[in-house]
Image 1: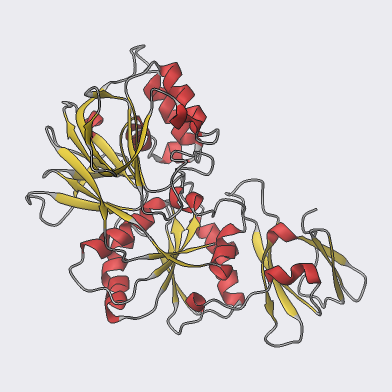
Image 2 (image 1 turned 60 degrees about the horizontal axis):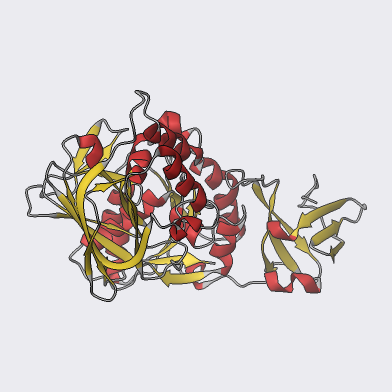
Length: 444
């Protein structure tokens, strides 16, 4: 039973819990119902005796249909609601305004609606001072990080950042922090509200278990350090933007001996990187996470009837027990290193990974018929069963190096936390764990 049309601002005479339903009755006898799964939290009322219930109204079946936020004051607390009672956490109590980043182009473009209907009412109801920033370009979050967030962190100023975006927004922030030569005195605490397509980090830490999960984490969760990897790239590598039509230098010194991008989720080459790059268009984004499956089918079944591309390159990796290994062949289909278990809510790419754990894992398989490759990817949606297949290499690693042997630029694209980088001809990429921990994420 979902919440019903009801004037939640009216006086509540009684609030009774039956099973996992809270039934509220007004003095006139009108009734409204709140399902426990839609409750964000219950706070002691500041102006009246009793309690204030925060909840979502009309959340949809999927995570893109969040509904809208409501509140009601109840005179007494049914015992079954006791686990929902919270006090404002420290990350919402400091004097500095909470910073809210609204990534206008992430995913299907829902971030502005989520802010208007969910986040802004939530902060206003709790009396939390906040400052909102809408992205104007692909550089907005990086610019904010350099001009504001980094400066405050170096000064030791506490700051909470609510990030309405996909994984790319997080990597924008961490890339600025890890490339800085300044001393970070107080890491910012970042609350994720997934508005991207895959939302790998949010999915991995449990923020895709229901429409209320992000607000529940913000109200009831706490900070945890974010493990990071460093992707070192050969000189000449460039960021790909504007649906593949433009290139940007990775660093202000493109002629340096190498360049580095930092990530917290995944680095990939081959089928995964190609499908992320090919589907990064306005037209594809209309389909949400289905865009990845659509692009994968086009890569596995080329329109000219040829077999899927065999990616050419030498791959070496260092296992956690110190052994340096090389893949059996220099031809590949799927090459990926991950710090997180999930790339989408149901796509369990690395079942042995712990959310915000520190172990990087390498997953690989070589050229396969399209039907077999599709079967392996389907198994990843079935509880990560793909890692049990004999054709799949899946192991914990400390480092990974790829030496590219492709002529065409299309086959030299790599994906780092959703961002696409093109490696120059004859170039290379190296991955390693980053020992510093300069950011924190608020997890459930």
